[in-house]
Image 1 (tube, rainbow, N blue to C red):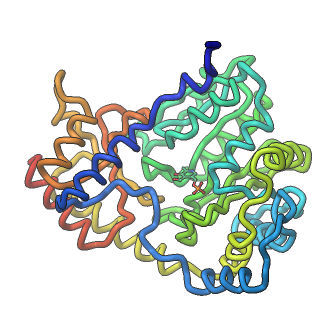
Image 2 (image 1 turned 45 degrees about the vertical axis):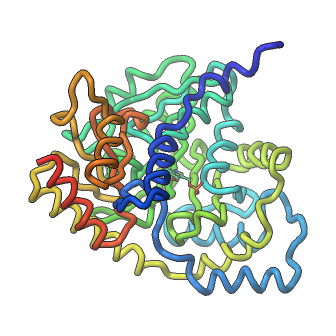
Length: 383
Ligand SMILES: Cc1ncc(COP(=O)(O)O)c(C=O)c1O
């Protein structure tokens, strides 16, 4: 037999999925588990959005649409980007995709050639690494640390740039750290990108969840619109993970390439979901964000009282804890997470896969009761 694809072979099986399937197995066996694993809102999709989808079905809005998405939705997204982010795009510069995940994959495909390098600021969402590899390019990690609020340093990025560097990919508010990049950091990234003529892919899917400082879109800075691809979607902002609606906003030449990839892979996203997303653009979900803020405050208070070593998140719905003191040569972060699941009844994600060994990620997209109970269990077991 001929060999299978090298670039696919190189992709690691997801650690997150291993933990997740163990948690599900324990749940099936009737184990009482507090789940801090979910990367998705625990809210229901707003009623108006669901009704818009039902209406679309009843009106037989069930045929192919333009592969980049219906005009009204792309127009609505342009209006959102103008209002919320200070960005000016035309509907032709928006491609609606199956979640931010596909938008990101298309964006990488539109700019990468084999052996190009993409600087990924880490800790980062695990999906970035395999996506870059699938386009036969190379992810280059530039690490950030809690001592520096998980903000990237200019010299670290400069040191990673070489002739093959094509783009910088970053995510603020950040999964998994909870960092939010301030204006100074965003300006620094813009300066480096302009100096070295790099593209920037800005993953803004958590933009609505900011607790201490505002979200800034890097494409709004001088000289950045032409080199930035902004990725966003409805999963996190409107509790719509299962609907699979995301999008990219990029200059026309890039959007045309993104559009080509999408038209030959999935075509348009589900027509019903597009109508739902169109409605979602006019639905205020501030009540969800207010609740995430309360949970952020609660979990930070509890972890602080219990003397855990953690970075208080400024955005998104994750918190990372340093668990190095509970590890040894025979116990990895994954071992510890498995042990905590079985013995303490708390499920968390080892952050190794996000490029942060010795740390775990907790998601606080769960009720305040669960947060209290989960941290109580962790404290009782570990402290
Ligand atoms: C950092 C980050 N970017 C993008 C996404 C994509 O989400 P979706 O494909 O549901 O829009 C996620 C989902 O977990 C994420 O954590």
